[in-house]
Length: 153
Image (tube, rainbow, N blue to C red; front, top):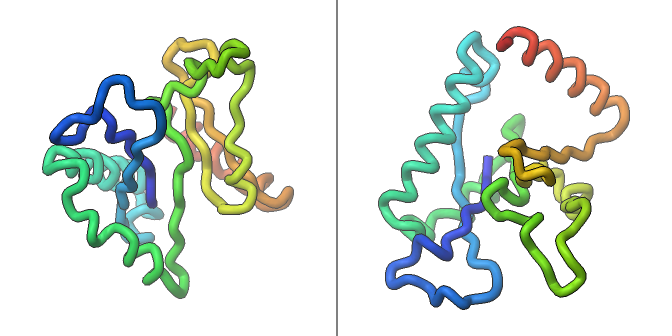
């Protein structure tokens, strides 16, 4: 899995506080399919993601020379899930002079196969998740998601 990290506040030396623009890096999470499909699959996924997040403590650019190669070495039954956006990017706080947005969608996920994440519009701490699949795949996904959620709750 690949996800982006806003590194504006993590650079050393720090970036200027009046910098206007993106400053993103990618973090990769690697987990074995058999672990993810096992009884403790959710725990395995969370632990792998936590390790990737903790790697930021080594420096946001640490290991940058190795970030892209794993994305191109995936083959066979291996899959890469990428996440576009983040709940920490505060997309609903963006105002280019027209006021805050009413709804934010990351439309590029239709072509990339990524899923999107952003903070919820109401600012109550929720997360909006976007996913684009063909209709039959979305129906299967919805069923599996509901079944998995029922097991967790």
